[in-house]
Length: 242
Image (cartoon, rainbow, N blue to C red; front, side, top):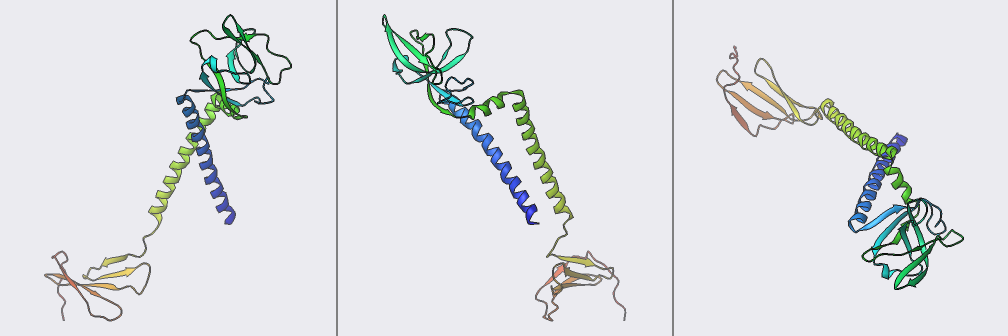
């Protein structure tokens, strides 16, 4: 019995923890969007030493003039396959009044074969912070399998809640009432009250006449009735004959 209770308790706590984790992750992601942060996932190993593959990288828009050597920025690749790189600024040069940023991946042996520049009015995407391996969960959530798993989990929770409510309703209907007296009226106009919980509970005796039915409360202890209620002529029986 103890093992069964432990299993039920573990299931309840596990369900609550899973729901709390999903809700917290969704609210956190929404808060980043509202605060104008830009979350993305590190999918290459060029920054493996400091930002492992699968990490969640959170960028914030800043003025390019605020960038300094050592900052990690995200930018569109100017050469090769299209995509976004997140590398560290290792040098800043000036060319005819225009700032040029030399970048390099922390795990790459050499600097990138390009320099980054920003046109007037453009903003830079500087990394505010990163969460190791948290991006894997985001990748899974965005995949078709992840969306299907999330929908299935929500449906399962709803079904379990419905079954639990049905079981509780059925249990309440099948459970007999306790502790309340039950009154039984006989054909001769006599009624008795018995308690389902105790045989020593007071009894109610109804004595009916041809005109009125007087209800008297008496106790097995032998005490005199303390009250009487005159009922309407709802019960009519022939008078007793001597």
